[in-house]
Length: 241
Image 1 (cartoon, rainbow, N blue to C red):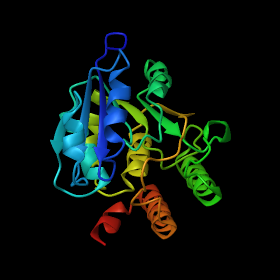
Image 2 (image 1 turned 60 degrees about the horizontal axis):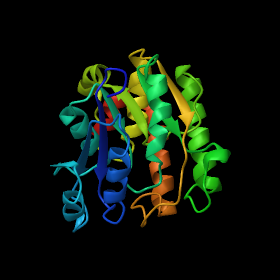
Image 3 (image 1 turned 135 degrees about the horizontal axis):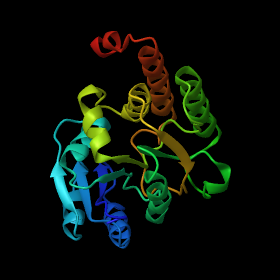
Image 4 (image 1 turned 180 degrees about the horizontal axis):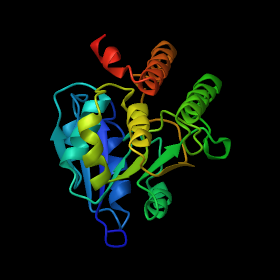
């Protein structure tokens, strides 16, 4: 627990078989962590066997999509403070202390991978990805008059359980651009938040999205479209497309 609050870690997994056991154990090595949930979203063969070697709880989510997996984790987690992280070993579990510290004053704490001092050698954060994420984050910041933002795609984040329970009925994106939808919805609902830099390392294995520049650019365009649609209150039209 962290100052009387139970802490749950949510790890959505699709293609992280070779790193997931290490990430689970890294989080369980932190005394404040109460539970680790692995949301198996039609993950690579052998993933369940790796999870079974650990103390984590595995939950199968058949509806494909990053958003589907995350929302399932939010519903299943028992903690008061819910932390989402990728199980590809790009993040450092110990950085959770940064998120926890800000959770005492804020409803949601977002990580950022674009601050140069925290990007490790070999990390998949080249010029296009780094500046693209920064630019879209700044667009979101201006359109919604938010706190300072520098990354729109970082999955390492913390939210209070009572806050996300109120947000869940309004979250619709089941795919990879769920992250910015959660951010925008939080701002529309007037929750207090902050974004802070976290360490970003080289990935174990290849990402099914950012490992392909074409897919990464397509995802970026989807994020931009979603942000504008939510700003001008036409997201219902977007979800019908």
